[in-house]
Image 1 (cartoon, rainbow, N blue to C red):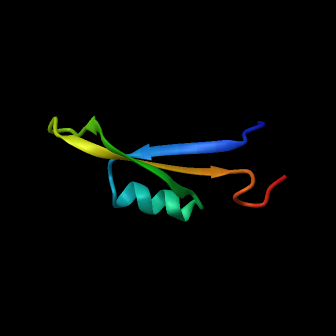
Image 2: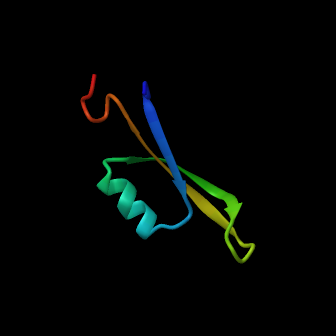
Length: 58
């Protein structure tokens, strides 16, 4: 598979962020009030990514 970049999005700032960081992903963007949580409240979306150049792969 020829993939240059993988992106992950979450509203969970604990478990999901911890996993993405463990996988080597870096915070790319915080989208303020971008989506609704399970209670219908506006919440921030955290966007993490990792690319080929981030981990030195060719």
